[in-house]
Image (cartoon, rainbow, N blue to C red):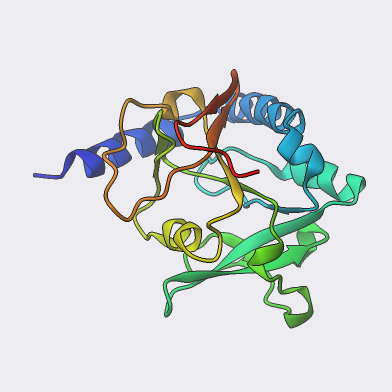
Length: 196
């Protein structure tokens, strides 16, 4: 019998896969607007974001806005052998390729590689989030390992549809909470201190 965490992941992924493209576009637009209102967004020079996968919230309009504003847009690239992430600045959508898990990732150009210590704000996808800021991902632990180590001081916000907000994601000892979660209807801060 699957664990409660696995059942929750399966249920919410099925719900997300059934979303209408019009709903995805509208809720993504609302979330992008909410993010642009955040002081952490306005003050950030380097923003870690992601390319949408399997009907995740689409932040590409936010990336375009960041480029216009002169912000540095950074995307993660999975390193499966190390079960870790590397980070690259992207200046255009043509700087993106399909990675090992079928997820769009930045091209691995050495001149575009970014030291994660410069990141000011991380916008993180997930399957679900809870009121303590814990995130349920796909189960690989890539973001948790990053935020437990090099990325521990970065302000990090989960990005979610309203149905992805749940009572508990059944966190484990290695799970690292977000500072808050941005949803179409607003920002919910987690019950952990936000780094200044």
